Image 1 (spheres, rainbow, N blue to C red):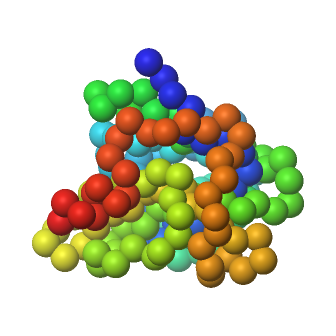
Image 2: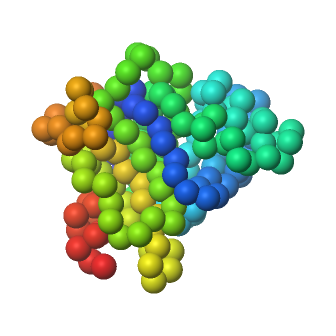
Length: 171
């Protein structure tokens, strides 16, 4: 059974080296796996911004600009199926110019995860000192560095996967 975890405009931010691995560049989207979540999550980017970012990499083999070119607003639909079927993250053109949500995908971080209120989050160990993190955080409307009170996005649902708190507590 599929569950929509999130469906709203958010800011996408990838952090770390080699966060995404291109699976295929289609005419209207780029499909990626996420380092640390290869069998657990698939990201499909339909945004012009994201397609320009990967097209630059494919044309030049220069990956240095990719995070800066890739990061930005998107309308995200995040679908969780089961533990046997990967989560699908689809990014399309944003429906507004701002958002109080952050899709944060970080690879190679140490155990300290920034303190935000997370709608959901997944943590995977990479080695004994580094982790991969994938989650959606709620950001304060006035100051994005301060967590805000919880309020659900449109069409959101609670994930059947372990929460950030459960995952971090298990390490």
